[in-house]
Image (cartoon, rainbow, N blue to C red; front, side):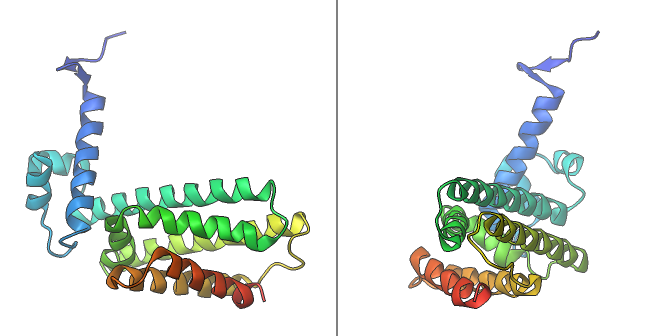
Length: 207
């Protein structure tokens, strides 16, 4: 078997992975501060200290890069929420504690880097019809996750009835609006967001 060719100690696969990461990190830095519309492919390349040719070897266009960062962020946020919920389900005596753990994980994940919040909740909105459909698919996945938490709570006797799935759709939309308000206002804190989200859950979704 032919050994992979190395350049400065890295295989071609590793070099491409490194370049892709640098482009994504530059996208976070620029999309999350200057904004998506104000950031060109050339600006991303300059920030990453890479060429446009290398950019197009990894991404079809600027929107493809945005979607990659969006997906990575959404997946990481989902993982944080699922892990927090699973830990809480082991000991929780009330369903509120389970959802509270998930909500806090979600808010703290995005609160740790306001650039990611801006990218996912502001810059990604209205980019294209295709991207809006992509965002809708992610909202559907979040709704399914919330419904799965309800089901797990019902199995453990923490919830008497699972909420109407449409209520989760409304909850997700409201959460998005609250997160955007927190991004735009210097007066709102993570605790304010948590307080509102808890109220939306109970008496809102959970009754």
